[in-house]
Length: 253
Image 1 (cartoon, rainbow, N blue to C red):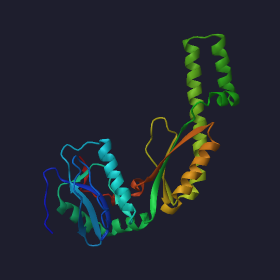
Image 2: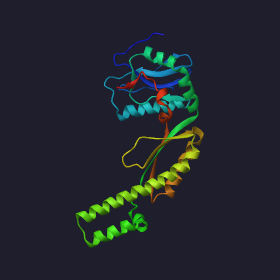
Image 3: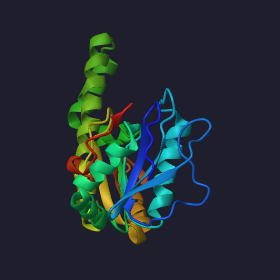
Image 4: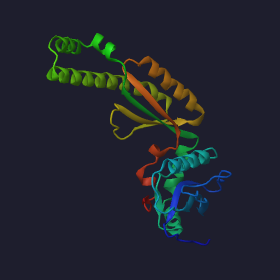
């Protein structure tokens, strides 16, 4: 194999089992879109391209990256790289594949036939009347603000409403998580997201993804006065690739 080292490095999309075919007409990130290629080492291969100069997280490139991963997953398990992962050259990628072949292979086995679905829970919108009906302290503060309107009264009322809405949503989020977890093969919390009381990713059998999303939608309806559910998926299984299974040689440009 001839190994080259493009000036801007080698962009890494995914690690796959050997002999996985690239989707027809698939292209990479950049403008014009980068030409994809596969490099192989033992039982593994990596999907790569030349790294575009001045790569940024543009919507076009984010979609190109994710769409490629989802198309690859149609033909087998994928160990996805996050957007912007670039290696110095192909030789370094091949060395990493050789060094950690068993770890990568085990991860691919675990992800086979599965996708990721992310669920976020936020305080319900337009839920003030339901909150007032059940929260005595909010009712009292609202009555006080109406009797003696002013900045301090409005501030206390606003803080009480925001806190109560968050608490109600958090309680609903706990119940939603308990209901969804048995329908998934695994679940991991994501990073804190402003405004969210729950950010959880679920590893779901591909064949069961529609049923899972339907279940989440039904829970959203059931808890609509307490919380709003936002689902994203199917997604590449980013959240279920351990840091040990991520190539140490790559990093965001």
